[in-house]
Image 1: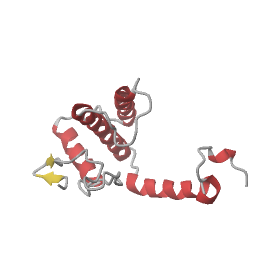
Image 2: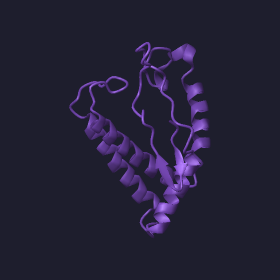
Image 3: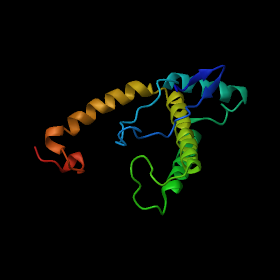
Length: 153
């Protein structure tokens, strides 16, 4: 089921936490829903903020601090669990839903911070990924977690 926007509300997928193919039980590569777009999220959050007259509070510094607080809430969900495998095996539906809420809070603040700082986030991501390809050429770094400054030419 595709996630999308309908009359200003988001519809959620019935299978939002499915990570395995039921026929083969092999992990599938995860993909995001095509909607809403980042621009849709920016617009919805701008409307939400405008309707509440919160722009006076939503300045870059405050948005950054709020986002960091939400990142802390994400980290609390992982705290004391040891390593957690991809797909979150052993997590309850409630724990997964809580993680989805906290990650959404982080994303909402990130998008609003980018808007207030006039950073076109999708384009910035493309530029940053191109730089990362130069810093970390696959032929040089394959299988290693070293920082780019540790690699010799």
